[in-house]
Image 1 (cartoon, rainbow, N blue to C red):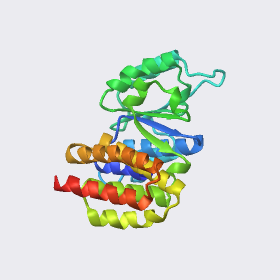
Image 2: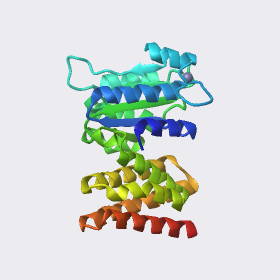
Image 3: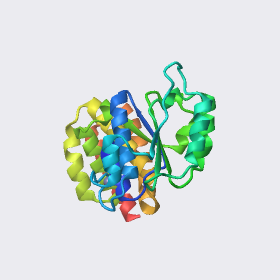
Image 4: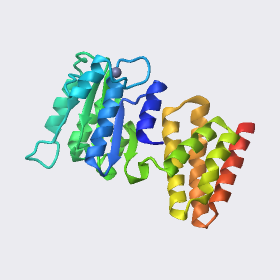
Length: 262
Ligand SMILES: [Zn+2]
């Protein structure tokens, strides 16, 4: 699913994560998504977030919200050092000024050295209920697995751009989660004609969408999302032995119907 739409959907379901890892090549685009997510987290509207009109949204717009705290790498260093992480950790325990939440933004989180990441781990694991963290980075490999496992990861980049593939992937995922065969067929039809590279990207997107829904959902939705996630790995294997796009989609549809009948 397209990341902005996904953040909105999580807000709608009241399932916003307290720890986010935003990964992508373009730092500017990452910061844009991070600011959007921060706005959603801080917005006081009971309807669609961000509303753009509440005092929090307006302060975010002007860049003066007191509950958005940014941790920057010091320009004379290549890394964010443990001293900075410890200072941030203390700040986490001070309750928000105005909003219901306090958001900590780390634009170059992949510059956190290992000691600094370990220092943050404790608050990522057991944060006070109002705290939220937005970690941004280009290189997923720079993060400790323990940090990664605490965060909801969003990918931003060429693959995540609104495209037929990502749009279709989110429609297919939704159809699968609902067990809606008609919606599935409608979404699957244009995908059968995708070229090899695009179809493989669609499968990746579908896999990512299923993993995200599995992480955010619960009960039946979570169960189905996990099932879909597992099935997409089977499809990747099928693609390796040149099973056609149409056949893969048909197989997934049959699996979905079996699941619905179970
Ligand atoms: Zn608002």
